[in-house]
Image (cartoon, one colour):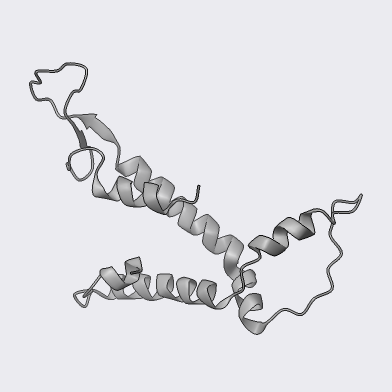
Length: 128
């Protein structure tokens, strides 16, 4: 199940609706495009002395639409994840612990026990 399927009702908030539509459009373009993962390994062996790979291929409309915005979208989504990580960081919960080596920590933004759900989702979603 994709994240966008789990989000549920947006509550009619126009900002939330607009953001969700933008993110779903990125996902749709990405899903329709062809993965270049295996081709990338092959093409990397063809790099010439100038640092380029001469490519003569057919590119589908979906691939072209994806490639047109992919760089900017990846940068924007990475910036989003980094900003969320800046917000969701651990802090000492300030309680008394029987084990001083394992102090209780909470997220400084949402106050969930550390690691908070936001941090875990980002960690699980980031490519390895």
